[in-house]
Every structure is written in structure tokens, then in C-alpha cells.
Image (cartoon, rainbow, N blue to C red; front, side, top):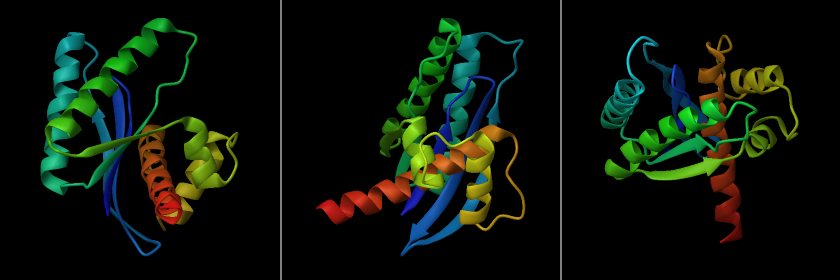
Amino acid sequence: MRILGIDPGIAIMGYGIIDYDKNKYKVLEYGAVTTESGISKSMRLKDIYDNIVSIIDEYKPDVMSIEELFFNKNAKTVITIGESRGVTILAAINSGIAVKEYTPLQVKQAVVGYGRAEKAQVQTMVKAILNLKEIPKPDDVADALAIAICHCHSDIMNAKLR
């Protein structure tokens, strides 16, 4: 199974692509889609959409896992991240890719074993689970890989329940 993990954002959107087979992970690629702050929001959203479509076309994931939106004190930030999530989900759906959404609590639980884990704990576990030499930077990239790992664990649990 090939998973595209996404940590949504408007300025920086982390992504990670992993293959998962028989409890083994293989990291194919990870990085960040970035947009320029000086251009209109609509153009930034188009850039995100186009970049995600390109990543999907190149790596042909079976599923995209994306972090659900959590409440933030800044309503404007929530709306903007929601818009970036929307174009990202649309890119996956238009490409025929299934989309699975996970809360931050679910991601932390799947990666660290504790839903209230600190960001540094999640990043350290991503590095260990994926056998990486260093923690991916920026943080959004490590988060995207954590979201992909979460899907692997969730998919295993769902298969056991079937």
C-alpha cells in the first residue's frame, strides 16, 4: 500500500509518501509544498492543488491521509487551513485517490502510543519508525509522515476487525 500523508497549511504543506507492506515501511519521498505570501490566496490555493496533483501523478498513491482540522484560537487561520485542506482533498478525489482523515490525537496515539504526546516525541518516533538519519524538517514534513504512519496502523486495525 502506498500512502501520501499530508499536514495541511497555506504557507507550508508537509507531505510524505511511504510504501507499507507486511509491517515494513519504505520512505519514497517527503518535503513541503510552499506558497509565496505576496500572492493572492486564490493563487496560493491553485499552487497547492497543482503541486498535490503533480505528486499524485508521480507517485500514484493508493490513499491520501490528511490531518483533520482542529480548533484554533484564530478563526482566520482555521478558515485558511480549511481551504488548503479542501483543495488538497479535491486534488486526491479528482485523481481517483481515497482520502482518510485523522485527528491530531489519533496521529499521536498511532505513532507514539499516547494521544497527548509532545511534538518532539512524535518527530523522534517518526525518525525511528521510518529509520531516517534525522528528523525531517520543517516540522510540517515530519507531521505529514506521522499522518501516513497513522493510516498504516489504522488500516491494520480495520483489517483485523473485518
